[in-house]
Image (cartoon, rainbow, N blue to C red; front, top):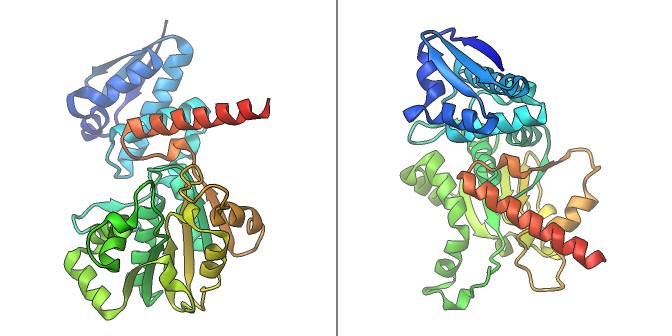
Length: 324
């Protein structure tokens, strides 16, 4: 039986560490099979030596985050545990950057994982960034936050958000209304992110001025986009011709971000995804950055991460079975 004592530098960190009804500490205890007891201005962690050491590293990482002004959530706790288990918890401090922007509700938008931190850095450094990974990794939300920050700083004159209107099992024709009303549901995630960052009134004002544009990918043809921050969402549902068309819209003093999840391609069978091809073709070109997210970067409900893992496992089994 081993035991480690961890002292609090500031007592207010104790409440942030423990969480409501001690839920954060209970997660750590369950994960590492240790006992954690509060003793005034310190914690005692006891159990098997290796498990105690990992639990203590997790707690110290969370305390470091609290000292940097972070709020500890279940997602933070589980992510710290994953980093400790992988032996890379020492990298956690590098993701604690200044916030990208603040939502209309006063919530700071910042990277929550190392993958997200790498993504934000890559967007800052490159003209074109390609982000590939599963649902819930913050690809769209962070890209919109970076676009809003660049727009507010005067680095670009326009934000242009687009995505292909490809059905995921549904048919556009069944939706009520005119063409724009039929297409709007496909663009809703982009609207939601912009509303979060700017508020409905400001978004409406900028849209009327032409400073912000949310449109289907087909509307991009024939244009040259200067002084713009351009985001292509759901890039896995572009054809190779659409992807080439989009990439060649790039103008001067502009940035492009292309996002997608190659495990959720809704194109007709036999049609190659433009994102899959571009991922292969452009990976060694200067000025183009590529970021691959993993299931550890999922920042939605814990079950989303479990669902992503289950589908990945099934897909790997299907592929290995097909090779036999």
